[in-house]
Image (cartoon, rainbow, N blue to C red; front, side, top):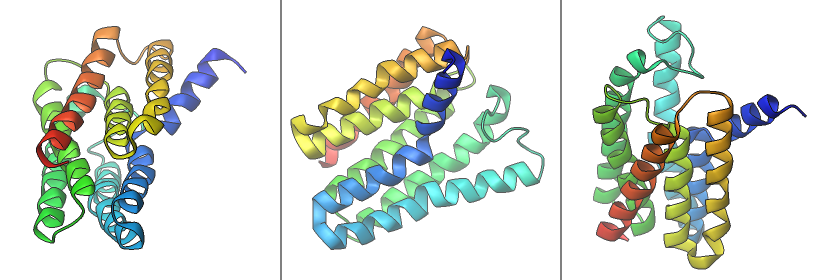
Length: 191
């Protein structure tokens, strides 16, 4: 298989909505068993579900030209909406008394998307690196040392995004810092 095809595959499987769904279900199951799976479903619907509906709306209305690769100039508006969606999901689950680990995961998404909104006009920060780093940190908080292999995805994402010439090393590092750091802060506050 050619390197560019492998890079496209790595990029495709490390998109934020694809990472969020199994993450919420794994964290929910670990935090509260079967009931946690219902909480996870709510988290998925409020974050990835509503974000994908919004992205479909933007695509159909012509406000976003390519939903798989949104140019930086088109990102800020959608990121604001997604930041609000994630903050609202965090508040809903917090106020309903959801499991602490899921609430912290939602807070980490709210923190990261707020930071993306602020940084995107200045730099093309990597959402892929942020998603993988945030997922790995979340799994480490919830599952301990068993989750350490999740960090092995980060070099693969760095390579893939560099191979596809979508980001610089600085943009990837900032993405990992925002995603991983935001998750660290969220779990430090609520975990």
